[in-house]
Image (cartoon, rainbow, N blue to C red; front, side):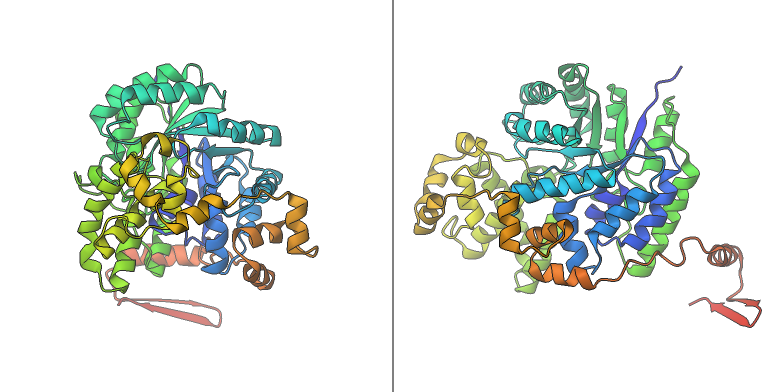
Length: 485
């Protein structure tokens, strides 16, 4: 009997985060989820509150808890997942409120999360993992891949052992930067699987270097049996490989993939129509880019930097910032280029280039990093001279003197006011008071009106088959005429 490979869908979370900047509306998500739920996925990644709450309220003017409630109510066959735990890494949300967020998600019916430490420090992650288990949330623990002189095979083998010692539900080998090559996969993944012991390992990768689909295929060849993928148009580019490519390739190699592709294709057609109508990105395969391995800035962050530089008339500095990012990353001890560490590196590189004097000006986050407030490994691996220069300024002494407070949930409630619901308290902590007032005025989201319309489907089929320039339809007192542009 052929080995079975199970697919975890990322379309509604990482796919849209990578390519649509979290601009998917609840009304689009629901019809897509209905179709994906019929396909037989092992699980679907669904909610990322640290990004989604602010984005949905501020930019989309939608209630993120409507996304959560309606989505979990509609998923009948496929388990949905949370992305991230209660320690967001952003340092702004009281931990008590983040735990309330996790409990709210558990109450909605999601009981599995994928969690990380940006340094692969699983001693630090243990408390969060164990507490989430006590709360009722099992964890898929990420082992984040990176490339640097210190990210050796031995490094990843030991970190895998450390992660497996937590006894999580699963591990996930996560190539967040799209840096893995087939050769490195063949060398490293068997050692990771051996070190994981009896803990199953998932494979999550991005397509930044153009090798995403092939790397997923090689991961399966090395023994991994749980693969993450996305549905076009939210696949490829800086997202995950297309599920259609992965399934086709695995079938060609003789693997069994228990997935129904008709609902997947329906989802792809639906979301592609949305993308065309709304002017949203349609993911496409990328060419291999060797420069990625020097700066390692994630694709979405590069596009944001380019936009900001263009606004201030410095769009021609991007190549210099890429080069400087490689130097800053080395100065800071080769942090993994994942949130929030990648933002620190990229921002400081931009400051260095714009000022023309390295570390003359530094962000508060760079100072906090040099103080070890974003991970103790920074103190072990930073360039000492650079660290001294960062900390030799009055602002660094001010930040060092600040004693961080961790208020209880009761203290947060007293400060916020007694009239807030749990959801409103979460929104106040994740965004601000104005977001709470806006959320109270938001109407329920409308489902995409064309998602299930037989008329629209019929017109689409006629348009595809007809050589005519016009299609006319009449029913009762209603007459519709559609013309090609």
